[in-house]
Picture 1 (cartoon, rainbow, N blue to C red):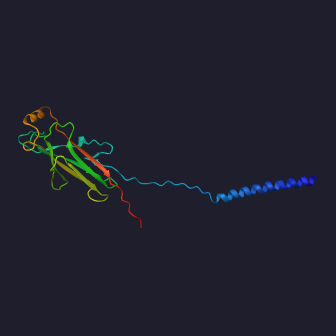
Picture 2: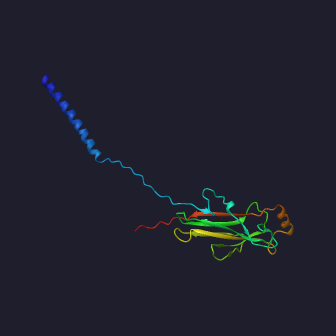
Picture 3: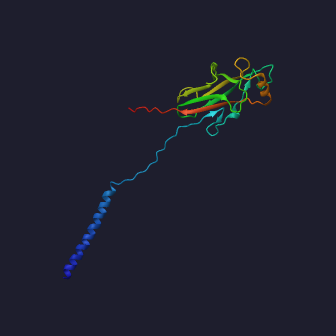
Length: 205
């Protein structure tokens, strides 16, 4: 009887050892096929940085203080001021040398909300040393330019010409002109938009 019990214990022990060996073998087998890997894939983000008159307009989009008007010399008008018949210009330099995408640029010119001198008009503009292009419609004084990546100049100077209209086409009377000289505000508004062009994916062959 004791011998039978001992045989059973031996078989049970042998079975437990076999089970442990089998479990270990299964773990080793699965370990060959379960692999975990990890990596970080860095991407370089295209730059979107513009300077207008040497001011970073991404962090500060109000470049009012950088615009300096220049009025043409007139023996009948004091230097540095504007009056009926005055002509002059101001410049805007746009630097997009640190932009990493193609984009459209729209410059819009209007009289500001605070302006009270309705006879101030934009007569034309030029880009860098190019010819002057006249504005023929005061309702459409805007310039749209496409800048393709890697093509053309990355810094351009736009010169805008203004005039205090007096005579044909004026909307202010002499009395209005006189009042403007006492309490009027002569001010124009410049709005510049930079719009990234939609991407055009190239087929990989």
